[in-house]
Figure (cartoon, rainbow, N blue to C red):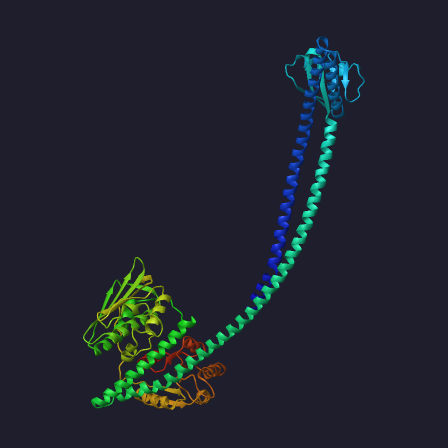
Length: 615
């Protein structure tokens, strides 16, 4: 648990920092890639723009020069027919235009024979350039296009042919110069890219550092908060565990302290009922016995509810014959129903298979439902138990229908809540803890089903549920078990280990009546001394005793047997400890059988029948 908390704390501390670093690095890489790609695209676009602008400007220059030559030609023509003043004026206009063009453009005007008549780049006039521009001159003379583009080697030419004067106007563009310009542009743009990336990285680094500082600060706050809550949670858990332990110990002690006197009370009632009494005495004895039984039911309900609340209630998955279990339930409730002259009708359908589930808990639920049905059904009515196995769906279906007082509709949704009955007057009139239905509802849930109810006031109620139960082969026919004779006696000598005087007196009467002889030990220490000095067929061992308890005494007895190579002596736990797991605890300690108080004499006799083959 502590290691888990440390792992969580380390995770809380490291994860945000790693996350922000990874996210920041990812964002930086993405941003750099984006910037680089953007500027690469920008470089390409700039190069295209440079080329396009140069070519466009060249075309423009050629067109302008063409227009100038055309103007000169018109001046000449006008000179032949016009007045001198106007000619003079126009020549000045043309020359001013040529001078403007000269400052801005590299224009060559050449004759068809190769003589340069004008050049803005100071090429000597009248120099014969026919060989250099022969292909251009021939192409210009033949073409019908006004503006022509020509690519040759390391130069790009744009030209036009002025037919009236047989002049070729051209502009030569050096590709080397363009390349130089492009390289310069590239360098400039790369400088900008580098500068932008450097600035971005610096900014990103600042943001990452700020982010890390914030995350570290927040992580410390989270860590402190987590540690505070963890400390509180640990304290609350320890408090809850302590409370649960106290509650468990209280319930165990309460169960023990109540069951111990009940053992003597039930025992003496049974002994007294066997004697001759008048009707009034018998009536009083029955009332005492019934009150004791009701008290025992309440104790069992409280213990079961406590186990369910703490999650310590275990469901078994074993194979059993449902017919046998229903027979046990029938035998248990037929006499109780007959006391109120109630007809208990049991209908079985398709119970031909052994099924896998928890027979003890199923019987407990059915017993609770039948007990309630008998309690709340008036005399001379009928109660029906229907039990059916659906072999296709592998479901065990159970319903209990009574003709009792019924439950109001507004109380139905609360009927399965703890300590709840339909009316407060119900508790006063019929008794009970109000836990029976809650326990049954929870048990059915643990068995995989849902307990449901339908009811109408003064007409009766129907409780029903279905639980999954897999088939496990065909069930055998129920064999009739011979009942153990009531007055059978046994020829055993035993050691009774019991500290309660009332229980000692009851056990003395009961054991003597069964023909058993015994020695008495008041605690575990006395039991060990008597075991060392005597031989016993078996030992009846209580648990909660002064000086030494039953488990400690049992362990010492088993050690003595091993050390002295003695035969195994059967030890039967006879204790008021009836909490979940108590039986297993006693068996694990070395005891052979377990009986809870109040003592069920019929179960005790079954053990005596069983051990006669082991002694």
